[in-house]
Amino acid sequence: MAIWQDLVSGAGFSNGYESVKRFVNRLKGRQTPEAQPVIVTAPGEEAQVDYGTGPMVRDPQSGKYRRTRLFVMTLGYSRKAVRLLVFRSNSRTWAELHEKAFRRLGGAVRVVVLDNLREGVLVPDIYDPTLNPLYRDVLAHYGAVAMPCRIKDPDRKGKVESGIGHTQRTPLKGLRFESLEEAQTYLDRWEAHWADTRIHGTTKRQVAAMFAEEKPSLLALPLEPFRYYQYGQRTVHLDGCVEVEAAYYGAPPGWIGRLVNVQWNDLYVRLLDPRTGELLREHIRQKRGGYRIQKDDYPKRTPLGTMQLLARAERAGVHIGAFCQAIHRQQGELGVRRMLGVLALAKKFGLAAVEEACTTALELGVHEYRFVRRYLERRPQAPLTLQQVNPLIRELVHYRDLIQQRMQEQERQRSLFETGSEVPGASQEVQP
Image 1: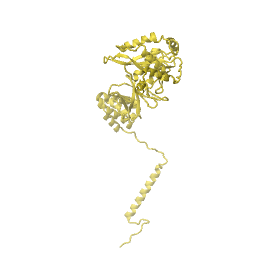
Image 2: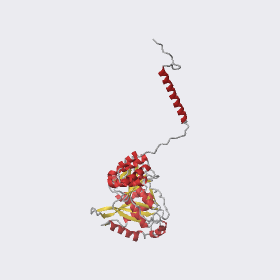
Image 3: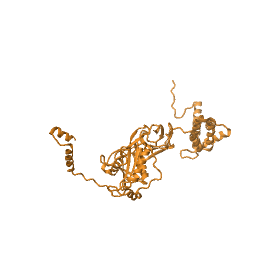
């Protein structure tokens, strides 16, 4: 049209628009089109998936008509397709649509070809794409893997592109529906009566007949459906926990300040290693403000609970456990520190001595920590035994002879001093 207008305005062209149109079409026909490869797949090997534009359906929330999204999964061998309608799409909806399609087909394929929409692919890369974790796990649950196309290369999934176009042009063109269920019922009826019974233009065979050949090659469905979860990353806080929806879950020791991958649903919370995907911890969901920490993950400085103290006392000794039970019954929370004191006495005096003291206290009916402590402090100690033979110890007669010799020398010097006699070897004093 622009070319025809320029010719009329600038060159005085007198012929009509159709003349220019026929001329341009002859020029386009001279171009040699690029040959497109034929992709042949084995039965049950591959399916192609994509979104398309669906019909107008009344939204129950707003009461207005809104455009739906048409999800199509087409099997590569038989061209059997599953068509599903949704209002909104997210990562979970995208995964659920695959699961519904597999169950409608009665089996799963081994490879799913898709484009790089965000619900399925987080980081596009023809060699090593980063898949949405939820989508990847749903496919793995059914034994399938995802194969994203090259960016801006829709020809790799031309079978599903053709299926979307066929659906938009044939059953849904110009129609409106009052509910999503009504639109899906209409689409399913058209699928059974027309789409499955048609002779496909490429295979020249009936779609339903080819699907009957392909269905035995599909992978068997798992007994249980996939357990859907939410996912994200969390930093381990100084208390060794991560926060998920206002509740706290313990991580293994050594992860404080590091990022972990978290998966959660209505029942469980799972902590995963972000590098290897290894399961670190699995916890039962807690209500808001609650904590869930495994016993081995508590910091060493964490005080023991009352039941833990009583259990430790039972392991220390029968009477120690009974004594601590009596303290707890009579004193309640005030007795927790006194039970800690009893266990500390076992480190200082030994378990046997504390067991004896607790036995005495129970016999006397005195359930006080102070009594046990004073009993141990005033308890008579066992007499010390001297070692009789040792290379460093001389014979006792040597010490006796030495003492007698020294005593005789002192006595002789005293007697000489009293009589005024000179001491042998001493010098005489000069008188003035």
